[in-house]
Image (cartoon, rainbow, N blue to C red; front, side, top):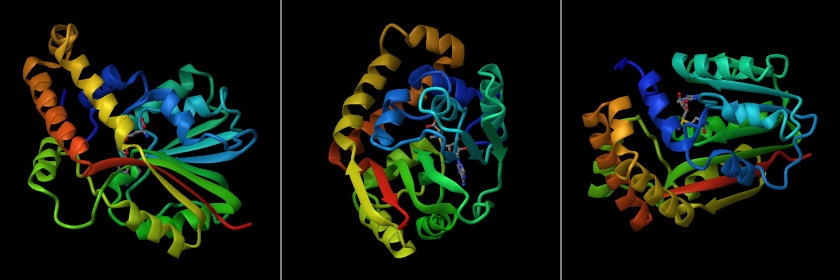
Length: 260
Ligand SMILES: C[S@@+](CC[C@H](N)C(=O)[O-])C[C@H]1O[C@@H](n2cnc3c(N)ncnc32)[C@H](O)[C@@H]1O
């Protein structure tokens, strides 16, 4: 049942998981999460996952990557409920705490996390500068921010194609450029700030996702989610692929460290 007050209701969650895998509400699954984290040691660490979605990322971080504790926060009740079910099924309630929060400041003690992680969720948070300051406050000295997010190539007026895509997506995206992120993180006091453009990777992935929606699975997806819904999603993917091909939509990996 669709709820117009929610961006990620149960229907949307199950559709996105059909495309991106159980518990994943963003592209690339566990492999892409590991690429975001590559080279970072999680063993014994306390991690915050901002916009944890339906929980597969948090679950991956504990048994596979060795994190001692993951706190996953999200603003939507259905995704938190799905994440809590996933954590319980994995028997990880002693290690993973999923919290429903209100949008706004991160309500955690100063210097209480070794790693702040986020996968394709910060695009829902309009004020990147305030978020960056908050991340610095809650990280322990020497702690890392490792994130993936959907960025734009500029902070000017979106092109007509980008506007059409944002209308089709209808998910309250507040996308910003790599230079705005870079500045926000540096001004907040993080060092070793590196942003890596993942546009070529996601251009190829998004085409595969469109093929999945339009290929032999279409009938099964239509019976599960509704034929009109799937037709609408294919149109959204077409609009997205246009702005990926132009480079205006450019997912990035974001890495930065709090000085020791
Ligand atoms: C594209 S999904 C990604 C979820 C998850 N990180 C993943 O990769 O599967 C974006 C998530 O961000 C959450 N979100 C939106 N605004 C937020 C905010 N202000 N703080 C935390 N999470 C937020 C949404 O509810 C949604 O679950």
